[in-house]
Structure formats: structure tokens, C-alpha cells
Image (cartoon, rainbow, N blue to C red; front, side, top):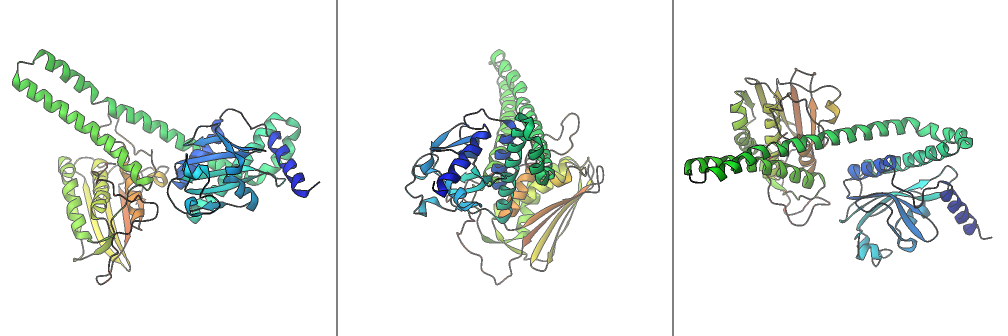
Length: 448
């Protein structure tokens, strides 16, 4: 018997022993594909299993679970050949895949990265892979996380097998020992992310439902007072305000979705941050004045230049100022400062507001993370502003951090951006990797 034939038979026997093929979706495995898609920012994530003639998707984000394709077209096959992370940055330019039906047709694979699922005996059974419609390359952190998730998927599969077969429990526990702590951490993160998502969806439903009651009442008033021009005008204004509020909520959702998924191109112009500060203060002033805050501004002498997109930088800073105003009780104190440190510009927004709980602090820039709200939800909004801030800062090659001594002790948000020297030219028209060719329309600032 040819050695390859023996290895393939052993591999297929191990795959069948797991009893995974042609089974229903399982929530725990779905968590890993969801986390892989979120961590890499790619729209499709799969647990793909390879048998004699096909690849079959046990878990899928962006494609139907249970879908299958012919094995001869499977990118995942190559991950099994190299037994390490296999990545194709642009399948359209790769002679191995350029004519592949999965590239020329649905799902139009361009960027592919697959981490092999390797059993303790060395058998390759499939991959945990992510797919995107645009050329790209995973960062080192993303590659390591994908490999870690793949190893954790294998651990879960082993646990699943041991639960079906008590006789194999001792061997399964030995295989799981090394990755047990890592699995527990990932499972806790997945559970927390799922909980935050549920809380966010509940709040979104609440925010979208709130304007419907006054709109419904206004429609009734229009029916019974059609002959009263003043009442019709006031009622129309009420409807307009509520519709504008709902539009703002939807715009926030769309904007944070576009930016966090890398679908927005930013300009790389020479920008003086003094103008950015001026425009951001103009946007934030209504909320600052409405809540009677004192705002202190400390700026160095102009110019302070960075390379970036002025509109998006204004949006980022306005979000931080609005966030500080929103979560500071009336009559509070806010401060905006800017300073230069070596090759960086440091912007800081401070407040003496409600602060941030220590458990929440590491997650404030994540989607679906909500700050503490008042019982009547007086501040409103969807809590998307900080996630948008983080994404915009990263698009400009910078970092953003949050500090707070705890609840009731205020917060400080610090943004660091690469400083552009006065004589250094700014590149023109070159979008960052993965950004779409046509710029999205400028969106209004999303409020935290």
C-alpha cells in the first residue's frame, strides 16, 4: 500500500470517528467562527471538514451551515498539505486559484487564511478559515489568534468525543490539559461578547421603539385636526424630530459598521489639528452648553500637523467630547489638551463624570460595550461612539487608551497620532490596505 493511501485512510477514519459530518450546527463551535470573523474583520468564517470528495462546513459565518463544495476546489486542502497557517492574499493573481469556481463565482474568494485542524495523532481533518472579498494579509496577531482558535476547536472536538465515549475520557483529558486554561478564557470571552450583543440588541430595540409612540400619536392628531394649520405644523415638526432621531441611530450603526469592517477609505492629507479641534468643539458645543459644563482647552502654538482625513479626525474628537459631556452630571468640568511628544501628537479629553468600572475599562472600545446608564436612559444613544473612535484612530496609525480611577471618579481618553513634520510631504490618494476604491460619503459623528 502506498504511504499516502495509508495516511489518507487513517485521516478519514479519524474524521468519521468524530461523528461530525452532515450533523446540525452546534452553538459552541459557532462561537469560534463568530470570534474568528470578528477578530480578523473578514465577512466569512468557516469550520471546514475534508472527506473523500468534498469539503463540508460544520460551522459558518457568512455562508449557510451545511454547505459543501467539491474537494478539488477546496483552498483548505493546501492548509492540510503544509500543516500550518495557509494564506492567499489575492486568489485572482495566484495561478493555483485564478480559475477556481469559488474565485470566479460565489462566494468570490479573494483573500483566504486557513489554520489546519490537526488531531493529536497528526491527522488533518479540515480548517478554521476566514475569507474576504478584497486583497489583504492578516497581521501577526490575527494569524496567531486564528491558530489559537483552531487549536481550541480541536480541544472542543476532543471534549465532544469524550462525552460520547466514556472509555476515551482519560485520553481526552490528557490531550485537553495543555489547552484547558486557554479554552476557558476563550469561552468566557465568547460568553461575555454574546451577553453584550444581547444587551445591545435589547437597547437598540428600545431606542428605535421610543420614537414610534409620539409618531403614532402625531398621525392620529393629523387625522382629527386636518383643518387646523397650526396644529398640523406642530405635529409635522414633532414627526420630523422623531424621524431625524431614528435616522441618526441608523446612521450611527451604518457608520461604525463601515469603518470597523475596513470599508471606508480615508484621505492622507496634511491636517493642522488646531482646525480639527476648532471644528470638533463646534460640533460638541450644543451638548456641552446644554448640560452647563465648564470646558477648558489647552493647545500648543500652531501648526501641529498630522497626516490624515480632517473630516474623520473631527468625527473622532467630537465623539470623545460628546461622550465626556454625556456621562458627566450637569455642571461638570471637561478638559481638552494637546501636546507634542517626540514624533507624536497627544490629544487628551478629561472629565469629572461618572467614571468607568474597572471590569468594563478593558472593553470600552469594543462593539456592544455599554457604559453605565441612568435608570431612565436619559443619555440615550447606542454606545457605538468609542468603537468608532478606536477604528478611526487606528486608520490614522495611532492609538487610543482610556483611564479611570473607578465609578464616580471621571475618565481620561488619550489619543496618540504620528506627527507630521512641517517639511515632510503628505502622500496623496493612497488608500490604506483593504479600503474600498470609492470613498464613502462623510457620515455624521456617532455619539457614545
